[in-house]
Length: 171
Image (cartoon, rainbow, N blue to C red; front, side, top):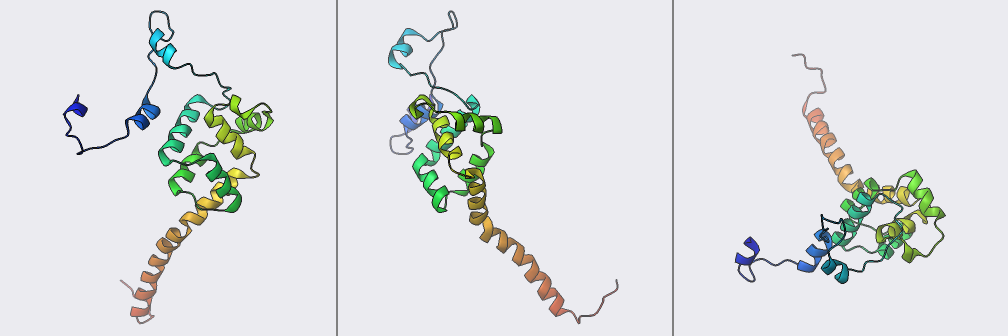
């Protein structure tokens, strides 16, 4: 592999993070179950899955990649603290459906029974108007840039208007 030929110190990456984000347990095609080795190494508990598995997986990747905790997001939503724009945009795209939100709100068991993504979204739906708050935070985060991109063309138009004799020019 190319990774073995890279000189030490020339390229550094976190192997544990890559394994966490992209690793999987091999499945034995003959009997459709995990191999004995991976089963012994990974006695993963079964969690209640409420949201779509693909959405849950993508949400976990997002949270790990940006190193954002559930508490930080909840605090930001309650207090109006700034969150990364990319995080807000992606999180809004992965918002639970109405049905998923209802199921999360009605869940009364222990939070530890839910998968990590479900725990995160459960905390979000328990915040009043959480996704509307995210939209507001996103708007505030992008407002200055949007305003500048709008003001610049008006300044150009104003300069062109002032440079002319205020008369009508016929081509």
